[in-house]
Image (cartoon, rainbow, N blue to C red; front, side, top):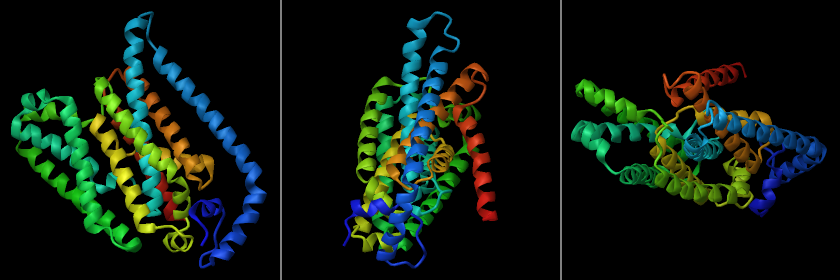
Length: 355
């Protein structure tokens, strides 16, 4: 059998449905030979452009409206940039992996109910303890509870539902959708019976905010993000093989069930880190992942993961600059991202319908 790393070399080539492994290889090699140089030039141009865009957006955000008060503004903004980068990369990497596993580019990990579980936990704390007590809980403890609960729920879901083959994977997605709907129903019930003043204070917690980030949480999140990224990049060749489909991946020597389970746990960990740090941002992953696919036009995950991460940082930094200096915090960053991402999502649906 061809080992996964060797098999990953054919991931960029078009594959005829029903072709054998030998035919896949025969189709792949000429395609890569003929398209290799233009593709490499395109990728260089893409990453140079993304690097310039990232540098420009960071410079804009860090210097806009400082008016000489660098000693106060710069350290605070650098902390916000670090939080934006951690959240953006975590969401981007988890979304690219999840879309590869599900073979669907309009799905995101939020469909598994992680965002709904976070909202349910925050609502339950305010509903039972009151907003004053809930806000006095140590942020590090809350971060650990949120991340641990989401990881625990994901692990139970994967062990209970994920069986052999693609059917198990799609059954797991369906169970996640049902669980998210159930969590949302419980949350809506508590919203209706909650004191209006408590509800107003709760709403401030449920929208993603980068204005007051605990530096200790940033350090922990950075370590967890680094572990997740290490797993993602080390398993990038296996992700390349998974783009060929389950049957071909198994034929090429991939341990499908173990690989999918490990990648899903990495996705759950990354989503837990980003959500527990600042709250849910629904459409960011969908937006940056699909933009990365369109820019790179390759199936190599090392490339797509990097491009999606850079795009996520740029989107969040520009969105935060718009929120702070144009809208003067009359809104939330998640609402800006969700409006843009929602429009893009509708455009993707219309494109799929025409196709």
